Image 1 (cartoon, rainbow, N blue to C red):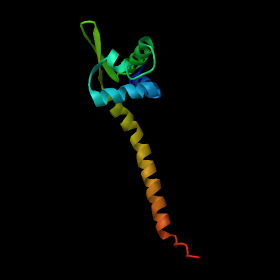
Image 2: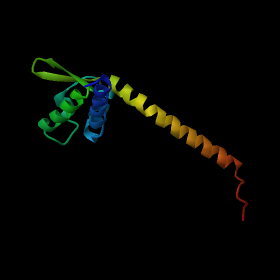
Image 3: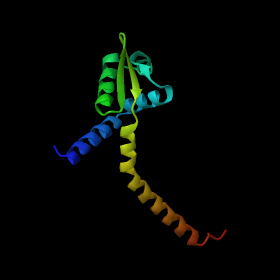
Image 4: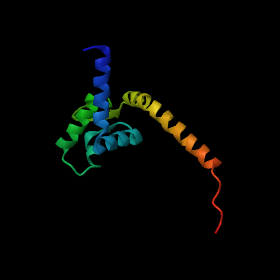
Amino acid sequence: MTATGTRAAEADRVFAALANSTRREVLRLLRDGGPQPVQALADHFDMRRPSLSEHLKVLREAGLVSEQRNGRQRIYRLEAAPLADVQDWLHPYERFWRERLTGLGALLDRMPDDEPA
């Protein structure tokens, strides 16, 4: 696989991981609460731990979380670097919409105000 193909595959894994609301919530919990054991994360969801473990596996494979063993516990930590790549990918679209909204604002400014009835 080429370097471009590898980067595309990595980006696909990140976007696939972010496509699920449970995984986005796990990322939010880790962002807001710092590193946490699986049980602390599981307490926030109405699902069995094996199901949450599958979500954590997807996040780990996408590079969005890391896992550290501490005795029998597994502690998960947010790894935000792949999110910077997503932000870089989204930036041209943000610029696109900002330009469109600026144009809309200019058009609205040029339009005459409605006369009161």
